[in-house]
Image (spheres, rainbow, N blue to C red):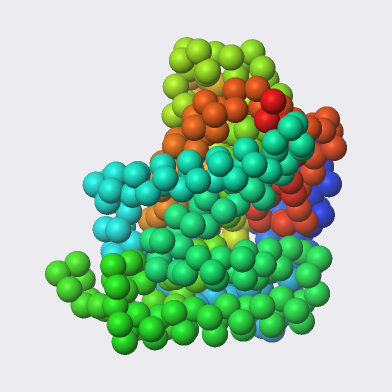
Length: 406
């Protein structure tokens, strides 16, 4: 069964836990209101796996009736997340595989292991910054000083983006994702990102280096060169997803552990592996709340529900991670000993599964144990009830995580 009255998704993220429960209780597929636009969302683990591999659901926005009919246009606050450049994130089938190939090669297990020493060095550098900022018990925002810069520096190195540009990129992306950014300003930011990444790609065409952006524009034994438009689309999306996801993974995991001291003690005593902790965090409080969007190219019957041709479908991965049928009656609890912890779809599923999932896990697996080894007495500096999310509808993005080191 599905809800006939759309559930309004709160763009201000005032009660994420309550919203997740309401979506889950509404059934495996239900209608939601995304800032004035009605679409379907999937909240069931099995159904999400089924539909993310269904070739009748595509990424091409031109298949969306509301867009084709002009009902949804540039003034919709979320348009920049679905009307995107041609890239591996916006096409399907053979073209998707072609555009994804070099990213998959760059993030293969062997290549990731080559990145490990660099990630460890960056982590150590940022832990020093954290120690300086939190000296003498001064509260410090773990997100701003540690969790934010680490993934940005890693993805910046991978893509060949200069460190002096990171602050500007972070500012652009913060404005892009925030629902309180005026739409005219958001469109201006989208244009500035286009200009910036066009310049980056053209520089690499003229003078390739040892980075993924250069790999996109050079034809070699790893595959054909991408067009300028395709390379721009890939790098723009990879830089955004490559830092946002990992920031939330690190911050949400630290928050969960600091609120469960008995579980943290087991982790620090070596009774629970950090990989298990990371998977439970991804399941319970993953980085993506609602992933926009796929479009039906024909009517799709799901039980007694019909997703009509031209309708949009969202995956509500946070609700999927708390599926009672998969995780039992304790699905809403954080439990690092959970046997089903790795049964989640936090990074998606099927052909469009997040290409940087393994990199994000690697960064967290390096950063989290190093953080607690350096600061075993880490504590929240404010009651957990005072923590809140940024006004970002799609990402589970905590505004700040004030902590004390001693």
